[in-house]
Amino acid sequence: MQFLAIVWSVLLLATVSGLQQPAAQRPAATHEHKLEVLRVMVPAYFYPVPGSPWERLNQAAAAHPGRVFAIGNPGSGPGLVLDPLYVSTFTSFRQSGGKLLGYVYTSYGARPLSEVKADIDQWFAWYPLDGIFLDEMDNTPGAHESYYQALHAHVQALASGALVVGNPGVNTVPSYLHWNSQPVVSSACIYEAGDASQTWIAAPWALSYPRKYFYALPYNTAASGWKGAVDHAFANHCGWVYVTDDVLPNPWDTLPAYFETMLGYIAATY
Image (cartoon, rainbow, N blue to C red):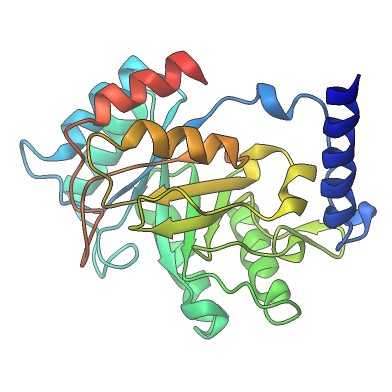
């Protein structure tokens, strides 16, 4: 009973922390949060030449349908021209059971909304998609919630139900998930760094949301560390994760040698 009292005390504190945002503006917490599966979302910033990591992604998607998502990025967005090789690659990946998001940058809310919407429009006009990844997302309270909410609405107008994943890369605040009782993003990356120490911690209020709202992206993680990084992300309430040993300046230009082993572990454990 003492153990249960401690657990209830922790949950009460987490709930109080989550009330930074009115209850009407956030989804209700449920006891099923811990039952949600952990999915893999790969920033796949590599060109689809023969023998590229896209072939491994296709095999992984076929082995674990609905579990493998990829973020395509022809040129810091959809690129300047339609690339037939990307069309065939993206189509093949989705036919294999994968889900695809298109990369768009937002300059932390400083990029004109019209430019971001134009990139989103181009993505959906050229390529088969399941959602949009908004990079360089702001997390300043009261600054750009309406900006990102407008982008979410724009994506939904083009493809109802599509994912809209924002990337502040650090802990954010509830108003960047829901604002004025409307969604801002489907999920937010709350950790993107090359620190393999596994000391980062999700904000306490996150426990009042389903874990599908949170995504972790550790890079520069050795083969001996990927399991700990995955477990740490799940322990910090993330429903999305990708871990790689790749490093700056572009830690997303290949897949780690342990990718398939890591995916198998995630599918079996979470």
